[in-house]
Image (cartoon, rainbow, N blue to C red; front, side, top):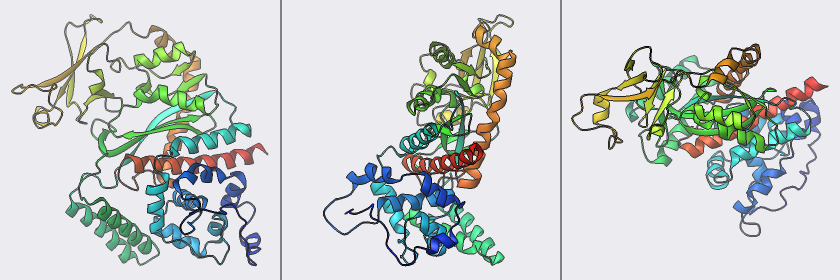
Length: 447
């Protein structure tokens, strides 16, 4: 039951916060910046309003998860720190003497209250709307890219997984410092999650993705659009094998739904697909994305079953297997007739669960060919040679820096739980955190 969730906290010790939490403290500034009652409005239908025991206020539970993302802490550690860190208690709207929650409550809150609320879109919309209202977004440009997140469980057997974790714990014990406690808490959280999932196999939603021709990862992708002011305006979380370019149009439309005006879109070669160029032209958008002659799949009936990985320069089948080599076929120096043929590992095809309709039993090779059309995209080719294109393309580094911030400061390099829904939730909190931090920075710079 929830009731009186917005009532003031009364305590004779509240003045302590004025002494120990300075005005320039980030958490104090976030509390003053954001009206978190929108969380209560979104979640009130998940609670009983007049029956049962009083629940921990949804806003406070949400803030616990936000603290967890901001400071890259485990459930246990964020609760432990909130016992003694006055800035945490202030942010959580608690009296200094109030008791903290049990860390297991965070798992229940995620699974019972936050699922099916469209958290990712809601939180991005909230921050972009806030930035637009304060006049912090002045550009009409978005930069797009995708960042990968490795599965928490990887492709390891239970024995390999536990051996790796025990090795990490031993290292922490040998160091005999504060990190020992954090390592043990992370391990405890992993074991609890494993028990709850009732399996020791790979993440059921994670997929193999490829960073280059020689390196791969097992996990998820987050497709991101960001304004020139470095505020994330849209995000889509998918499994790891998905192609970056397929999500450009949705990223643009999601960004526009926040109220942002867009004239220019900047991205790498993954976004220069034929459909994206047509979409940009039809919507009077400048697409600053270099062409790759191999990225257009032509009129193939099964074009969605094979996706081009721009980093590796190879096609990937729907099972996540990458071609092992490629070669040009047909007559040379005849642009319209030239084809690029990609060869796959036949041994993998023989045991593939998707081989029906793709691999013919007894075949000695498996190939995938695309037509190379030398006359395609003439206008785009001319545009990418212009000085305007080259200047705008230089701005792409900003989103690479944002991806690095998500990974190295907010734990976005590894999934904190299993499943696509869990990854979407993690993305929502991490992106909300980095957007709030960026808004505070832009406000300081505008003074």
